[in-house]
Each structure stands twice: as C-alpha cells, then as structure tokens.
Image 1 (cartoon, rainbow, N blue to C red):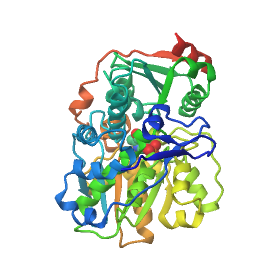
Image 2 (cartoon, rainbow, N blue to C red):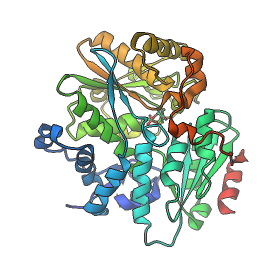
Image 3 (cartoon, protein in one colour):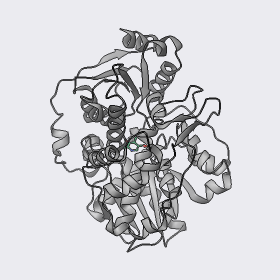
Length: 433
Ligand SMILES: *Cc1c(COP(=O)(O)O)cnc(C)c1O
C-alpha cells in the first residue's frame, strides 16, 4: 500500500505522513491536516457487513489512513483495544433511534478517539527517548477521555486545560484525580479561552523549540478519524430494517459529525446529516445565510457544545469542496435553547422511558425537526455522553434519582488536583517548569 499523506488545509506547509500529523497535531502553518486521498471501501465490504465484527470493519475502514506507518498486526490490536465496549442502537419509535456512545471508560464518545490516538502515539514513541506533551483544551468530556486514554502511556505527558466552574462535577473529577502523567490546569475563563491558549502554545517558537507538543483535540487526525467507526456500527444494526438512515449529531467542534461524513465518503449509505446545536449555532446560521460568522461562546446545559468557532468546520468545507449547495444538500442544522432541551429530556423520559443527557436531547430535537420535513427517514441521534455525567440537570428535569454506573463511582470522592491559571504566560511557565 502506498503511504497516505496529509496536507494542511492552509496549504502553506509541506505534506506529511500520518505519524508526523499525529505527533504535530496542527500543521506548521496552523492548518488542520486532511488526508490526500479517500478511497471508498469496495461494495463487497458493505454487502458483507453482517458477517464482519466491529473490529474487522474498523480495521478495513481506517487502514488506508494509517498504513504503512503502523504495521497491520499492530493496527489490528490497536483497533481491538480501542473498541472494547458496546455501541448499542436503541429504538425509541419507528423513526427515531439513539446510538449510545457512552459505554467506554469515561462514558463519552471521545473515549474512542482518545484510546485510538493514545495507542498510536504510544506505538510511535516506543523507542523514543524524547517525551511528548499532549496539550488539550476541554469543554468537559475531552479531558476525561484523554486523561483516561493516555494514563500511564510511556513517554507521554498530558496537560489538560478546562474552564473553571464550567464543567460538571463528575467531568471535573474525571480529569483532575488520575495523577501519574496527567496534569489538570483550571483556567479562569471560558472554553474558548482554553482553546486559544492551546493554539498560542503551538505557535510559540520558544516553547516548541524546547518541547514536543501535540494536541489530542479532534484537530488531531488520530483523535478525529476513528470517530467514523461507530457510524458504521449503527448502520450494521439498522440497515435491514431501514433504508433511509439519517444521523443527528449534537455538535460543538464538529469533529464527530465530520467523521461521520468521512464514513459516508468511504461508501457508508447514509442519506443525510443533521448538525444539532445549542445556542452556539454558527453553522445553523451559516446554512441559512451563507455567512460564516463565529461568535464568542455562551454557556448552556449542553456544555460540551459551547463552542463559538468550531475547529473542524473547515474539514467539512473541504469534504464538500467548498461548494455551499453540495454541503447544504447533505447537511441540515438546527439550534435549540436550554428550555427546549429540558422539555425534550422530559418528553423522551415520559414517552419512551429513556433517560437522555442534555447533548443527546439536542440531537433528539434535531431528529424531530428533520423528520417534520422528511417523515420517511429513520433518524439516529448520537447519545454522546451518559446522563449521569450531567447528573444535576438530569435529576432536576426528570425528578428521579439516577443510579451511578461503575465508571462514575470509581472517580467519586477521589482527591482533586489542579493548578489554577489565568493567562497564557501562566501556561507557558507551567510547561517550561
Ligand atoms: C465533545 C462533545 C460533543 C461535541 O462533539 P464535537 O465533535 O466537538 O462536535 C457533544 N456531546 C458531548 C457529550 C461531548 O463530549
């Protein structure tokens, strides 16, 4: 197999290999990396899908993006270890299902990308004496998933920035209590401030001359691409019963939905995507007005989607060759208030006896809005996190105490360790110390 190259979407940096793209995170010209080719899987793959395991499907799908730098037998193990939990689709009614992505160790979909990336980086680093520092900003779930995925990985230090007081208690425990090679920085500011500091660090010549920094946000190809797996898993579970499958993806940085679009590029027969937003709705507005106008983020109850300027939208533009009409033909977007989200959580509970978290509930609302115009579709909303990660809101809305799963119990009561910072200089000082 020929080597897959990645190019920078800013087009001012040389093409690079998968390995370098993973280690660098962002290209030197600040662009996101994008694969040079996307070769659809053969029809025989899709015809045979009922006979393939999830690991086999995932391996076939991801192989072209990482070969030959990770040998086949290593990649097979990485994929199997990454996917060591369930991805069930739960049917709510004839037109709506939910794909539960919260059965991993931190109970958020980000476990998949974080586990895959940690194993890739661990492989690349196995004979290397230079330490890599993974620097990551989190609006809530990334931090925990990355901390868990990278815990104990040799030669890798993890530094997580999170907005003080703006993540849930359980999320905070997941990212501040692990110790070892994981450090949490509590930022006086918003998620956008955290993300800006991380971006500044990647461009800081002095800093990057002294340490190898990489990112584990969905800008990193090894975090982003494996997220295409579970769109295929949902299809496998539904394709016999439904032929008009639409995914509604609760979106923040748009990495998850963009990975779904990559699955579609590989030939996955999906009819349409719905980007479901809270009031941080730059894409909803873009599809209406053709004007892309990022705004500072506002805080909502679906905090992992409180993103004012989604970093992966540029990859979506690339997939559709910057053609607005092609994009619009494949993507709808709706945005919902916190009040609508709460009502939806209650409706899902009362009608279907199902407990959704606020992000999933936004996805459910996206399905309902889309189905109004397209009543024949079968819409799958992604349940991106377990409801108990947002315990306060969930119990307040449905008025019923929620049992805590073992993954959550295991972090409760552990001691929090974090360092409070306010400025980029604080961050730099911490990193160079
Ligand atoms: C990260 C996250 C999202 C948003 O995903 P993107 O890939 O950033 O669009 C949605 N829901 C939850 C629970 C998340 O943690």
